[in-house]
Length: 384
Image (tube, rainbow, N blue to C red):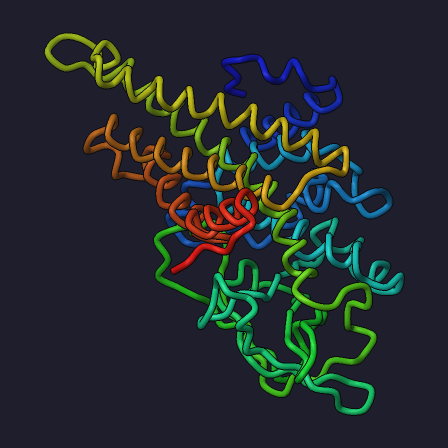
């Protein structure tokens, strides 16, 4: 991997081995095909099973549900998946951090036994239903409601921009109890009243499937409610897990666009010289490398805090905010270096750039993470 400051020397041999293994998998089975998947807007039907076979789904969960990976080992796996494509990392991240993690952390023993093994193997696909069309950045404004009906719950509402929804076997839906707190509900695909229409015409994350969750009088038995958490603490804690993986994953995309731009600059000649000899091109390449080096040190430190049980949500916001924006800016610079060739998917740069526009937006926009950090360091909510 790209590692100008030899940060990987700070990792254990086992952690490095995980990164090398996932890198080899990505090079052999993902990168040669992902451009075609992106162009077609359709990942393979067996994608989750492929990821599950590599132990990439819920890998941080302890055995027997996962591999019990350290924070750095898990981060490296997300890095290498996103080096291939942000959509592939998103699919794995949603499955592991947003579906498997809350079932493990807040579910019953019966729920863990029923769902986690199949999700870990990719035999089941899960999705996370939190975002709504009226308030993506304001989950407290949730309009999906749950009401008791005997021993069951009835859900009504809709969620949008839900990764994996059109293929999901199980949806974790967060809904507000009437005159009560938010709760998590496990809703199987075949439940009457649940629809999962696909969102089409995307120009980003085309190698993953995105859809909606539409719930019309969906009846959920009480045993499908997560018993271990109530309130927004549940979904927000899941987002902290996922944002941590994004902080690592974005660096993989940054490496991909840097490597493509560097190779192109060495080969492309103008006025009898490679453009790599031009000062402005070197400035762009150095800026990319510097941003990657800073981001890798930041991700490594977050991993240490995570393993020590000391990682705070605002620290994760810093990692997500900084590394994703750095990757997006690097992709834009790489596109400039490639000139006209930068707009064709014959090269990976425009694909990564368009993907990163979404990564910069979802799971907390750049501005939202700025406000999270501002409140954390000042103790004040920012005024409008």
